Image (cartoon, rainbow, N blue to C red):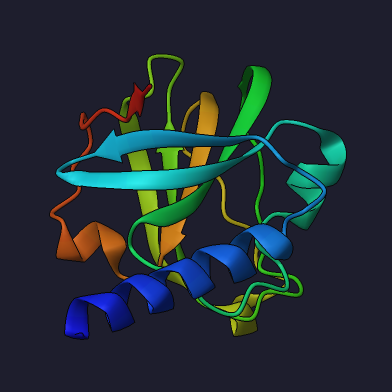
Length: 144
């Protein structure tokens, strides 16, 4: 019974997460540290500008992967965000080169940027980096 409740709750969060990001239907599976995750891919200007704004809650197994066409030093802000997140900067090989922990909605209009060019940005649940011991050099792996 308890497991059924957890499955239903988890499905509801994923449904809400996907529904709020319906402009971007590409979803992939990935793993970082020991955590297998479902990631919505933001690889268009519209998807990138919306990001996770409007999403109230995600689990530690959910996130958004921003994919830039070339290496860049982007700036992220927390405009219209309803929850705090961790922002993870990834290089062209999907290795962690830095991260911001617990970026809060009320930090807007503050900008968050990596210290070097990156190719990917992973947004995850607030506190994720600390809970799983994220370190520079860890690698995001795409799963089939």
